[in-house]
Length: 464
Image 1: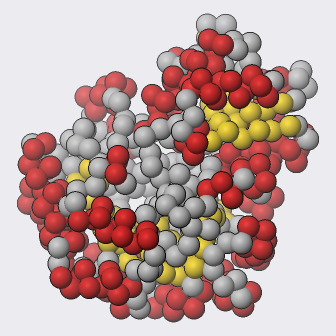
Image 2: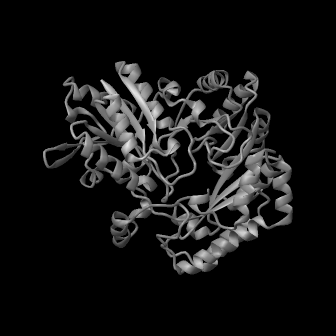
Image 3: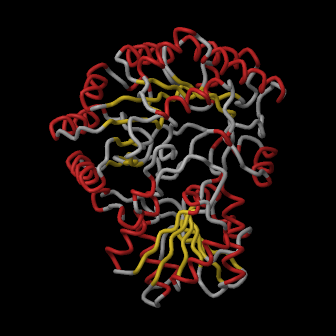
């Protein structure tokens, strides 16, 4: 069987390699030996017509597409184009958006199947079913059409043994994501363009009301030995100089995190490390930070979200803000580029609470920060907070993380916009912070680009 896996084009400038598709490709190749072609529409800015043409040239028997919620419109138009031109080829949708939306998404798309949550095993079983080797209704996690009816086989257990999974890097082609100005990671700045993302765990048990549940609440890890062996192989195969660790919660288990870093140190990996995905600050200690420095870490980001104790409880974050302040300071003093994530627009949030978050963020000695407007993504607890929000989520066009488009707070949109602009200006126009940034940032062209964006005072999705 010939399987084409695609990521649609979108407005996003950030374009790390689509390792989710890489996991799927490797699972299929290992279990079935199929021919798989990975097409990254975002990396090459391919139109729907180009992706469809590639599928036809490849003579695909099945097409799988992944998408985030902010790519929902791109997903729908791509599926429609495929079905218009090659209607007999089954289309399977997976990834963050279908998982968040659930089975009802199939009512709005002309796709044939949805795979919810982790897709490696489910996709293999679906391909077997399409060849008549198993029944569709025996595949957990699958949503499918039975005539006019939408059928859901119920949730699939999450994969326990992550060591049995691997990524089809050859199919992805990492060398196509390296380059002087390409945005192949979370941040515009980096030690090297020759960087790749890595997952060492899946799942997060915290249950924050605004957060996704793609990988479940059960924390599962790749063995430290496997993590380091994979990094060494990638370094040698592609001449890597940097890795981004994309775990949802790398520091949940401190002993395990320390073992991973100790093995990296002992292996002489000699690559820079970045942790951009929002550490929990009150789960850090100085021993872990020292190991991170020795292992080559130059960037860490902490998810603060709100400085309001009420909101911390409302969204089940319950972060120890005093402890977080101390950890951010400790991290910055070690000359690690330290970032924070903050959010405004929580349900019934007051202007006073918003300013408390801004004041807290500005008072920290970190290097970079981001202020987001809360978006109640489908599938999150906060998206179901009232019947009115539920209805609006169904109709909403998710296009940007930064625009004020879904304000649940008690503050008018124009006031929130003013607070955001002021927050960025107060944060980045601090002379001491600017000096700290120039002192500690990697000295390469990406620094100039990152600083230009920061000085605008407000990051728009089109320029970030």
